[in-house]
Length: 350
Image (tube, rainbow, N blue to C red; front, side, top):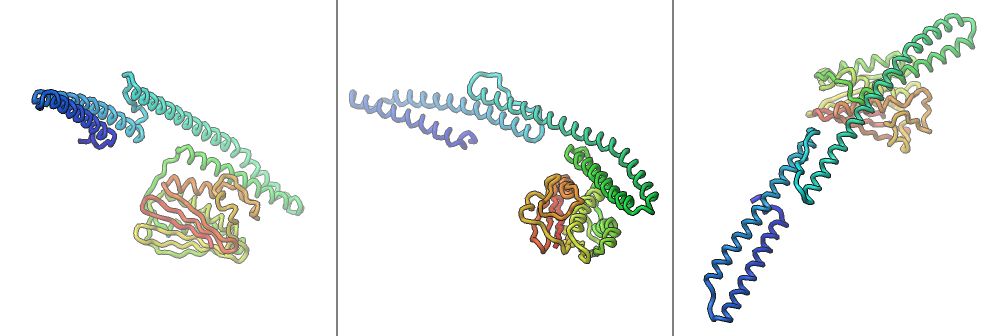
């Protein structure tokens, strides 16, 4: 019987049975001492009493057990997503006071969840509004800056500052775009369109994104891997994540260095490795590189805005994935990304 799976309940029934048996034996001994014989009537009365007491106890504990089973079922329903699940607690007693407290806790959790959703929606809308408001003046400033550069052909100093101004405008535009993306990811307002995508094609797109920059900085991007490996993901968003990691590798390499992107498949795991001969990450920074706007005091990169790796992490986690990092100064860095959809991506910078 499931009731007796509870050790305390089992001990209770054993204790009650033992107490009644002791009283019966004492009564029989007393009758034997007074009359020199045992009493059969007393034995029958004892059996009836013991049966009645045990039956009442069994009924009571069964009732309590059913009430607890119902309460556990309601709690499990709440944990499974039914936020309206509640435990009936109209009766009096300590157990019903406990149920009432559980119901109050559920109500408080619902209120907190609702407030969090409202706050995220408010943040998303605020960032979105600010981003859209900034796009127009940024576009105008870029046009004015372009015209200024054209008009300043004979003025080297003006042309130099106009070029620097263009870089800063690009940084602001990148910051605005990344803020908008990461806020939408936080708010859960992005619906990923996942499909089986060819990894080789995605990596070729990544290489194409950085080909001009690599040529300008005299760096080399190499690709290697099978042409028939596929990955179930949202192509554009996953390319965005890997773009940010490759950009981080390029930011920490010098003239004449290389970035090697390779991919392979083993069993149900797809692995992508991005290797470079970069400077590595200082041990002090390893636990902070995914924090937004984090700037290392050891970094020589003055152009980053501190959102690339956090955005990559947010995209990966939105795909039910995890990302870890390991690095050695002067040797390189290894980013390891694992997805729950029977696939794993390893991004390594060495």
